[in-house]
Length: 566
Image (cartoon, rainbow, N blue to C red; front, top):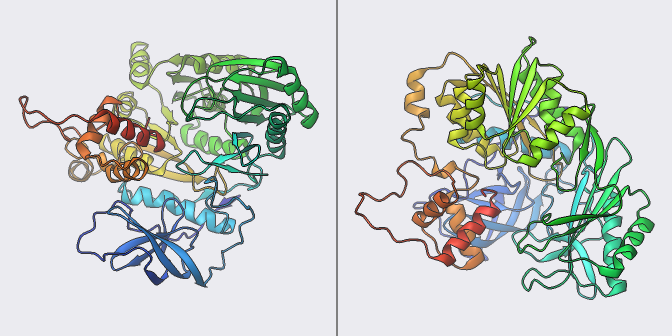
């Protein structure tokens, strides 16, 4: 499904705008409003007295009577009390857990409206953060919006009377028990139910993160889309002893489609799902699937796209951008297990992939051998190291493909890519904000945005993927110096996934602690996150600054984790 849609503009206001001489709100005030845009999280946005008010599950064009429920220096939130004029795009949510578990954001609207929202989310970031005039005119929609995920991770916790499975409420570790999930496969739901039934029958408690006591933490299920393999991984704080085989038999009886059952003994504290030791209880631990006609073997802890049908659309477009029609040398940064690299290799002279995780590099090489692809090689190196290795071999790639995590590329990685002097840079992104920030960095090195396409990888959520093409061209150098130079610009408001006010708001809400921008910048530096060149540094070498207390450092680090910065 390809969509060219005229989207509602996302609100020009952001929750972190500085508010001067604007309306003061009081909690529980009632207002009649017209929704005029979306936030990046699919909240409806209206404006009252010059301030943006965010209203969950409201759609642009609708008229509402709202109640003010939260007022802070960063944002104002309202709750819809009465819908006065509904949008034609409004739909009754088809999931009883919608709005509770935090997994979906768009079940109250039809799919065309969801695509409009996502396309404009991308373009709003390109306009406001990236200062770009070129816009994405197309979004590649999904042929299926139900049960499209090939991987499910259900949390397990003690319910009111028995162990239950579900998802943690947003920004908390409170379990929202579910009987089903419409974006997960039916098999994964059945597997989670089998595990919790087994726990109840044998008196096995769920793991408690606060006390560190209990056993079962998660049920992880992954299925092949092009094949019959299906793996269930039970994540537990310890083994099941004499009941281990009984667990395997219970899962096989409830889920005869399974090709493997794995136990992951994860003794770590915190919310990491897969860690520690893996034991195959029955069948095979690896799942075999195909993507873009290529065969992959996938271990439980290995990354693989959760929506292969949409991933194939994304990779095809990335290949169109990267390949020029001649025999190109391509470089794939953040290559992971080599999925994009191997897709590109079929149309290129050679592909060199780089990844800093040794196991992923080994996996990529094995996948190349499995598919008899001989023109791809993989390096265990970061961007800077890879650039030096290629230069030492006298190689200059025709195109570089990057697919970084949500926090985007740091300035050193952008510099390393540009030092290779490729004709084209293809950037695949799961975060429009950090994508737009990084486009500015490439602009400063002479690369211009040429094409942009949005891809709906995660239907019914607010997340969207984007693939863009950057290339060298005629650029007004004066404009670069004045508007886009990053040398003297404080980019802290756009860096690494969250603004300073967002971090302060998160810490205050979750811990009651107030933290300063100085403390945030100190912890950013500790975590290796980029801070503006002179941002919050001492005025002189003799100056002394207060250091962030341990309890505030812990709270700031938790905020960084929430926003995907570390």
